[in-house]
Amino acid sequence: MGRKLHVELQENSYDIFIEKGILSLLGEKIKSIYNGGKIFVITDRNVNKHYGDKLKDSLEKAGFVTKFMVLEPGEETKSFNTLPRIYNELLDFKITRKDLILTFGGGVIGDLGGFAASSFLRGVPFIQVPTSILAQVDSSVGGKVAVDLERGKNLVGSFYQPKAVYIDSEVLNTLSDKFYRDGMAEVIKYGCIKDREFFYKLKSLKNRAQVMDNIEDIIYNCCLIKKTIVEIDEKDLGERMLLNFGHTLGHAVEKYYNFTGYSHGEAVAIGMYNITLKSENEGLTKKGVAEEIKDILINYGLPYEVEIGNNESIVDTIAIDKKNMGKILKIILIKDIGKSIIYDTTPEFFKAVK
Ligand SMILES: NC(=O)c1ccc[n+]([C@@H]2O[C@H](COP(=O)([O-])OP(=O)(O)OC[C@H]3O[C@@H](n4cnc5c(N)ncnc54)[C@H](O)[C@@H]3O)[C@@H](O)[C@H]2O)c1
Image 1 (cartoon, rainbow, N blue to C red):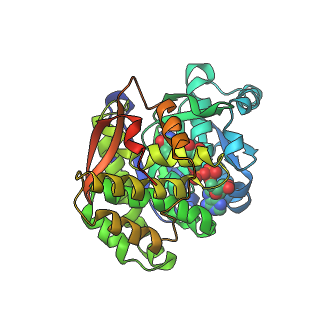
Image 2 (cartoon, protein in one colour; image 1 turned 90 degrees about the horizontal axis):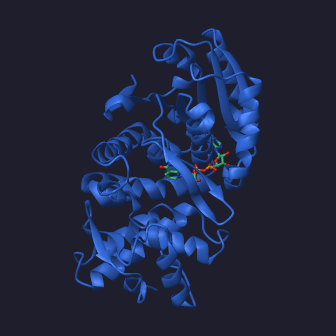
C-alpha cells in the first residue's frame, strides 16, 4: 500500500503520494485532482526511453490527450535558453491555465518544467513525477523551481508549488550508480540535520540492494523532514536554510573545479564533512561527529576530502555566493548528529578549511 504526506501551505497545499508501481496507475490517480482533458509532459531522453510508454499508456487509458516534450538529459538543459522552446510547444498544444503540465524526470526536468509552468500564461498548474533519488527526496517537494543563466545556477526562478507529487521508487532501479550516490548524499544530509535515528539506520545499510529494500521508508522520511521545514518557512528565510548543510562549501568546491571535477552530491559530501571538522575544531560541534560523517560517506562511496591548493579562492567564491547577504554569512552547522543550527559568521570562517 502506498503512503501519503500532506504539505500544508494554505491555498498552495498538496499531497505527496509514495507508492511502488504508481506510475502505471497515474492516469486514474490524476483524475482525482484534475478534471481537464489535456496533459503536457516534460521529460528527458533517458527517462522517456525507460518509462515514457508506460506513462503515456496510463494517461491515455484514463482518457487524457497528451503531448510529450523529450529533452536532452543533463544540467545544460536547465538553461534559460531552453524556455522559449518549451513555451512554443505549449502554444502549439494550446495549453491554457485550465490544463496541466507534468514534469517527469530528475531535478533538472522538475526545476525547468516547474519554472516553465510557473511563468507560462502567469502560471499553469503542474504536477511532479520525480524519477531520481535526489528529485524524489528533495527537489520535487517544496516548490523551488528555477533555470540557470550562463553566470550561475538557479539564478532565475520562483516559488511555485505543484498540485501533487507522485513518487514511484521502482523507477530507481534504472538509475546509474553515479546518480544513486549523488542522491544518497542528500539523504544522509537529512539524517545529519534532523534525524539521528535515521542517520544510524542509513549507516547500518551495507549496499544499494539493502538501501532499495528500505527505499519507501527512506523516501517517506526525507519528504516528511523536508515538508515539515517547508511548512514552517516556505520562502527560505529561516528554517529552510538548514537544508543547505554542506552546500555553501560544496558549491564553492563545485565552482573551483568548474563544475567538472565533482558532482553536486559529491561536493555536498565534501562540504558536510569539512564544515563539521572545522566547527568541531572551533568547539561548536561535539567531538567525533566529523568522523561519524566520514564513515557514512565512505560506506556510500562518497568522497570527503579534496585537494585545494589555493584556499583563498574558496573563501572568495563563498564571499560572492548569492546566499551571502550583506557582510554576514549564514552557514549551517550541526552540534551533533540530528541537531543543526544556523550560524552567523563571515567567509573568513572557511579560511582554515582544507
Ligand atoms: N528545487 C529544489 O529544491 C532542488 C533541490 C536540490 C536540487 N535541485 C536541482 O536538481 C538538479 C539535479 O537533479 P538530479 O540529480 O535528479 O539530476 P538530473 O535531472 O540531471 O538526473 C540525473 C540523471 O539521471 C537520469 N535519470 C533520472 N531518473 C532516472 C531513472 N529513473 N532511470 C534512469 N535514469 C534516470 C537523468 O536522465 C539524468 O541523466 C540540479 O539542477 C539542482 O539544482 C533542485
